[in-house]
Length: 425
Ligand SMILES: Nc1ncnc2c1ncn2[C@@H]1O[C@H](COP(=O)(O)OP(=O)(O)O)[C@@H](O)[C@H]1O
Ligand SMILES: [Mg+2]
Image (cartoon, rainbow, N blue to C red):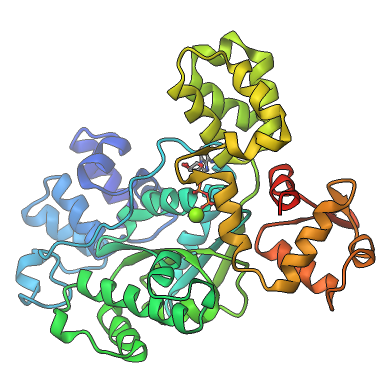
């Protein structure tokens, strides 16, 4: 019998909705829907086990269920050798940090992630990478974590997370990219993944190459989701990549990657006015309703940057007696805008600074000179007139890649807050 038909029948007999079954089995509603509509022919082994359990199947029903899934019905315990890699009784790592409660304006990007992940699950040969890039504060980290959380039920052997940028900085020279600091960072990350997958401390090899090879061995047959934040480049990513086709890697890239295969790239952009307004409205509630004009101006001042919106909302939450227009008044002043959009060490300025710090001197000069031009939009020629950098066009392209500039018409454009930062240099 076709598995989807069998599943639907068993679900209805158990008097469960698709949502109810998803909840009890710990698999996504989408998976159940895809199976029942036969968009997916048969479930993964672990999904079949979870579904059979949630449906309370036993005896011949269970045997027929697994036969329809094209699998044998032996209970998992009997199949597994204790201590074998597939022994799921060991705790599966679930390292994703807590997700932001609600992301605004990211439905299209999340749809892409779901689509790419579904395609990845159909691939037989190798792990797929989905990379995210965009300007500082646009919500790359938040989106990567949300995407991981959305997909996690399809990766029951574990979800691994690492802030590679932070490991790299901890390992020494922060600006080193995939050079020595970058390699040391990657080595620390792979070691932590090996530990999470049950490799004893004494079994972790010394060199990055050996650690990476062991990681590929250990992860080979596992369904793993790996989320990596702030990866410098392809060289730094490679040793962190599993080889097995059951793994998916979601990466926040410091600049768009090239040369990976299979690879899906998603650019995250600033939010529309409508989404920005909705975000502020949802955080500020009645205060936003009471001052619609101030909220509109606040939206404009934050220029679609989620980090700015978040910090503005936080400032207001910390000052419940303030009217919204009081913060707007402070933000209107360009001189103090970045200062107002900072709470502790979290701020728009520091997040741009983290990217700026890694620029080559020539690229940094182009950034500074471009900001001194009269308007936020400019051409390569405009910058060339004011600066001695050898290859202005290349520097500008680098600035676009790292998210400090964006293409606009026949030239380029600063994001309003980035320009304020650059003019203060
Ligand atoms: N789409 C969004 N909706 C609501 N809040 C968001 C959204 N994207 C990001 N945020 C919030 O904005 C802040 C900055 O996001 P983050 O992911 O750290 O940016 P990035 O990694 O691109 O520098 C975080 O507090 C995050 O929770
Ligand atoms: Mg980030």
